[in-house]
Amino acid sequence: MSKYAKYEDVDKEQFQKDIEDAKEDIGAPTKEDFKHLIKLEKCGRGATILGFMIIFILSVLEINIEIGSFIFWIVALVSGVLIGIGNLSRWANVAHPILHGAYDKIEGIPARYKRKGFAKGIRRYIDWLDWIKPSAWAYEHNIMHHYHLGEDEDPDNVEMNVEFLRKSNMPMIFKYIFVFLLAATWKLTYYAPNTIRVLNNKERKKRNKEEIKNPEYGILTENGRELWKSSILPYALVKFLLIPMLFLPIGQEAMFNVFMVMVIAEVIANIHSFFVIVPNHSAEDIYRFEEPHKSQGEFYLRQIMGSVNYNTGSNFMDFGHGWLNYQIEHHIYPNLPLSQYQKVQPIIKEICKKHNIEYRQESVFKRLWMTVELMVGKTKLLRIKSI
Image 1: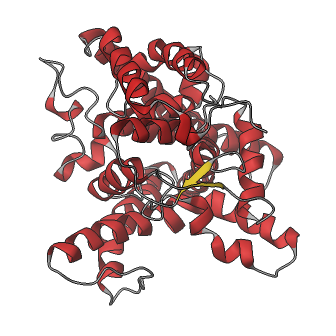
Image 2: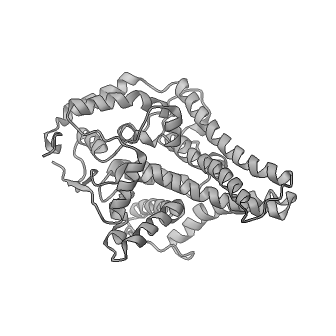
Image 3: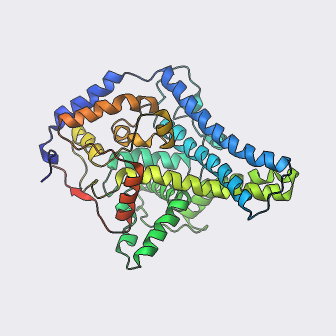
């Protein structure tokens, strides 16, 4: 028998009051919070620049590193790790809070750090160039995922999205291999098409057209054209063609070396982001909700019961997690500046203790393994109905 309060027994009105009072206590965003964002941005940009500098210096000095040699792969891996870290940081530490409007109310900051000015038009290539179309991700993530967490309407419901794998009769070893391949490519194979699908369905709904659940992504289809035009081509041409070609004046070998580093960096960025994003809401102790919430207090309760934190505390640790180790607090207050999550986290933990609500916080590695076990069908999410 659980030692925690039952879903229906939680005083949701008082719980709502406590949650909203906590936000009042930490105060409105300030210039200091914005300076914190700039530090994170510089760290991410710095990792990217350092990664390119390593391969550039070796190319300019004409150090003979043969493809396939041990030294080549060490250099390529170090460069790839740094560029991959910069890639994740640009998404998690910069694009994520800005697109939630975390800094919108801070006066006197550049428009590119506010939701309406970030990654718009040509600035996408400067602010956040990825496989994912910014406006599609903002709707898929900020609206559909955050306000339908754990429901069938949640486009990031892991259990639902890999149902085909969970029910498959393939040998278990191949299921694990599939999960690894998904993790290594998931921004292209999952996030880019899924965000396009969700955004296009929003537009179809406005035109009173039926939503498409399993769209085709061939170049001649509606979703396929949009995917190639706004997701695949902009990113692939810059990352895997334009950037390597910038090294062509040094030599063809340098150009190919950079191409290889970009591929390695892409795999690392995918695996790193999969590590810190997917386990946030997927394991046998996380809840799936069969009906929409009916009150704000119930909404807050679901954000805690449907989420898990990783280890938190230091700036170094939080940067490595993309600040997604504060997932519970983030789902309660999605538009907080990242620096404020460190302040509010112990408060939320105490509120959960007061209401006898389980507050999950464990190592990202443990949560990742629990997620993999869910994905291959060995475990399943818990179920709760609204009241």
